[in-house]
Image (cartoon, rainbow, N blue to C red):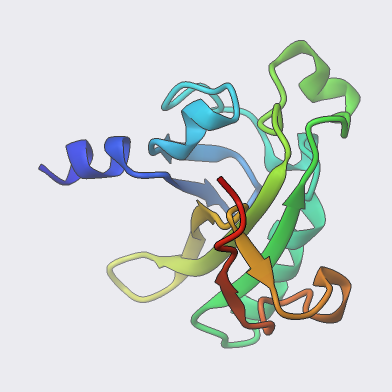
Length: 147
């Protein structure tokens, strides 16, 4: 039932190991950016735009943070690095995403990867420019003027 809910909602859930290899990618948001569930499994996040956010999340999680949140501008015109150019970019559309990263832990409690979720907030209106709230600190309200 959880699988069906994730696939029908405008969310994406993915996980990586600490080397950045994608080990899970699921969710209905994937189709909105031209991907199928599991399509990027085996690829490395270093090959995609916004890699720096994943890298910052890893550093912050290793420093003890349990949740790291970013507001991202997804730009379909951005090009992935050479290694990813042989695969579809996970950014085939434009929009604004709210991304949350958390540690993926072994049964012993050691951080072994990163679990992440994203939801599109493109239909929302940032209260402040995204450049003023790079870590998800701005408030967002619904833009009632959009169709």
